[in-house]
Amino acid sequence: MVAGFTQRRPATLPDPSATVRAVYAVLPLFTARLASAAVVVVGVTFLVFLLLHLVPGDPVEVMLGEYATAGDRAALREALGLDRPLAAQWFAFVEGLLRGDLGTSLASGRPVAALLAEGLRMTALLAVAGLAVAVALGLPLGVLAALARGRAWDAATSALAVLGMSIPNFVLGPLLMLLFAVLLGWFPIGGAGGVRALVLPALTLGTSLAAIVARMSRAAMIDVLGEPYVLAARARGLAEWRVVLVHALRNAALPIVTTLGLQLGALLGGAVITETVFGWPGLGLLVVDSIHRRDYPVVQACVLVIALTYVLVNTLTDLLCAWLDPRIGGAR
Amino acid sequence: MSGGTRGALLVVFLWSLAALAAPWLETEANRIALDQILAPPSWSAPMGRDDLGRPLLARVLVGARLSLGVTLAVVALAAAAGTLIGVLAGWYGGLVDLLVVRVIDVFLAFPGILLAIALAGILGPGIDNLVIALSVVGWVGFARLARAQTLSLRTRDHVQVAQALGTPLPRLLRLHVLPLLSGPLVVEATFALAAVIVAEAGLSFLGLGVQPPTPSWGALIRDGTRYLLIAPHVVLMPGLALLSLVVAINLLGDRLRDHLGGRPR
Image (cartoon, rainbow over all chains, first blue to last red; front, top):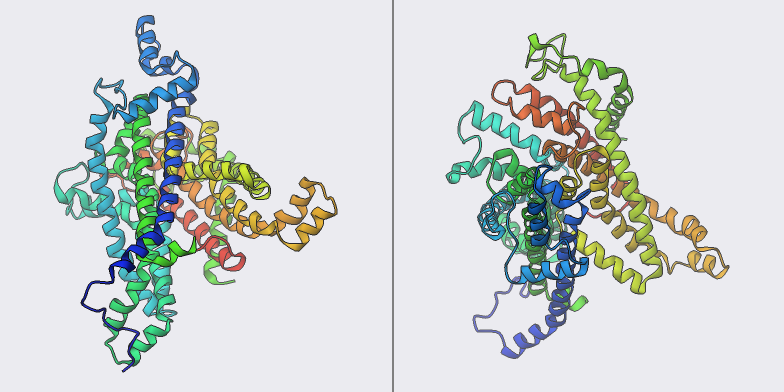
């Protein structure tokens, strides 16, 4: 029996000094990654702040419409701080953010933070469901394609992946609606009520990511299946499912996890369109509605929250990968 | 050339032809027939008719002109600006490079379509604003690629020799750096075409792009979803048109990448 390749880990805890050394090894990477994330966050707030100044003409006039009184205009101008120099305005904007004050919605008069909290919850729910769809569909397809490399199943999966990556959410959404809500009547056509209402939006959102996951896991599995340790595991007569699912998939997981983290931005962007298609009351629908209502403080806050979420998750993914695979930390 | 590649080229060619022929179809595309509202596909209207009885086939063909026109403009602008910025950052290095990398990081922190939606929404409707919003989002991919490639090309022998010979910088970059960048940039541009077609249609779908009565694929799909229950062809036809073009371009992108290298899978 070939020892070493698949030797079980000792049941005792690892040497504590080794743990301490491992932590120190990734520490510089952690601080560097957090510092660059901090710079990005500052830049993001600045860009979002600038959005309001891109409104053609006078933003106050655009937001209030032509029938507003001079007093209303002056009041809004002062509330938004538009009468102050740009740098002071940005400073006030950031200061408000730090206090958790995202401004007031012009359309409803409610604090933006309250509007956002509900939307964020719904968008997070949809995004997690979409992610689950992507993994549940993409991973098995990709692994099976890798095992059937070069055969019909592999080619079919590749074709399916191109189709899945190409179909826009606003085409897939109505198609799924037509099939599963109108013709079959299995799921509601839109809105947000219970798990059944989540199914079609999650499928719509998750499909393109599922295609990417399928491609990625196919490539990763093909790489890993060629490794000597997989050959060794097979030589030891382990069952094929064990070789694939336990030995190979474990090492193929890292690039797949990285892909998921990187694609989260596309997923959040896709959520904006998906929410509009299905009337799902998340941040995306709030952004689009607020744009049509010219309620720009809400638009700014939504864009900011989505971008910051993306930065946070990306940073966490990077750190997680460095933690899982010490080679990444050592390489820097 | 495989059958798939040939098919994809044919699809792209046919839609380009439609875009070129669009001016002659415009009258037909806007011909209202109130007695044939939402009529399903038939001999007189192979794709059926919309909510004002206008023939969808003509509208989809005219829509191709707008989609392709906007997309080409955006990709050309984004590729030119992004490549220039990326090459200069990679060439000069130091503080310039640091600044550019930070700006790229900040732009990458936004989901692309979200930033485009916010920009298009705030700039207001219209084709010009649509092109601006999508280009502002699109340059980043080209800049990142051009920067990374230039960084490694800078130390190549032929570039250093040209520099030592005192070649002026614009000439040096044009003759000795850009040609070596072109492969990955072409691959990037191909995928960008597909992405921008979808993004443009997405913005029009949200009502932030092209305004009626100009038919664009996104706007046609948006109008169609209202009649999903009674006349599904109104959303299906433009949806399939869009899908066929995007699939074809993505397939070509995959083939090009296999040949020219570039962004990893």
